Image (cartoon, rainbow, N blue to C red; front, side, top):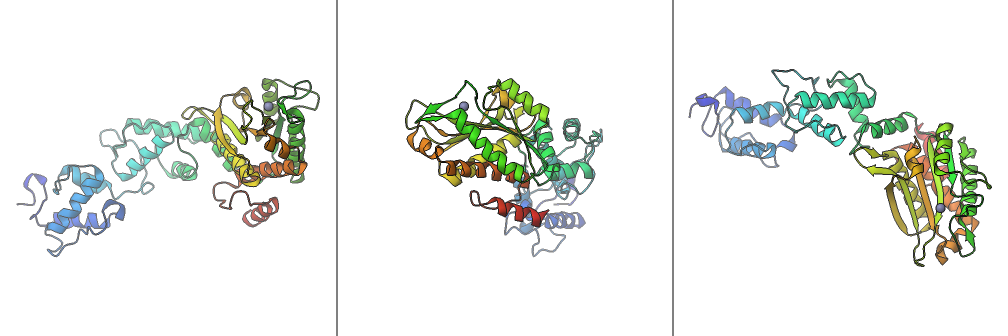
Length: 391
Ligand SMILES: [Zn+2]
């Protein structure tokens, strides 16, 4: 078989073009070739032998191409594109001669994951990809030139661990937390004890929800102010603002976070445990990623420290969660209707544990994703030491 016949290279071909294919395959990252498939064979660099054919087949399989072991236009083009990793070169839409490569594929996958539709993942930088890049840049506050250079790559880098299934709002929210640094001190936290005044909320086993959550809020407040956090309450002992009014208070305070505190009750006497809620209606368009993260953190810390049953965290479109412009989490801590939950909530030492759990979860929110300390064991002093060490 001749090298140049219809531009195809296959078993038996020879010449510099074969050496080129072999060199390209050898240079690929191991991800492209299964272990044990080596493009180098006994036949020498310029001979298309069975080793090279196996490597070509494996590469075609990996790329979703027709697996025929022959290097034609498609396979060669894929081979050429495979040398690019995202970040190796500036990516830009060039009509008439589209940029192709694995870096474009990675870009398209990333954009789609983040909720910016780049269309079909085909490794070609076309108009859909450009449109998605512009939308991403606008959401992230970058100049929307539609090309992928260092600043846009850095933005992807920052987001790599944190977001999947994002939207413009989610990105901005995450970015605000990330840029705001690692410390709680200097922030504003709005505490929203449920009910109040004439509205008692749930009652059971001699306990009154509005009183318990106010006491819990005071315990959280004490700990927060001790580390330099400004605390704003949405109500006093005697008032019961509407949910809209509570949200308005939080917005006016420019709070970083809102924590709404409630206890539950249920006619089913065995209902027991803790649940948390954040703003979430639709993962694509109406979802607070930071709210979800904080809701999970609070839940995990409370469960780990108290052993209360884990009733999970849930996305909801309740007024307080929807009308607040910052991450908001509602905690339903225990069932007053449950004898065990109630007995524990009646104990002020238990409320201190709850307060500590809330505080540590807030601090963990700002520590970011690198914090690997085990849930439920971290004390405030540990966190301060961690912060002192990590700035
Ligand atoms: Zn309530």
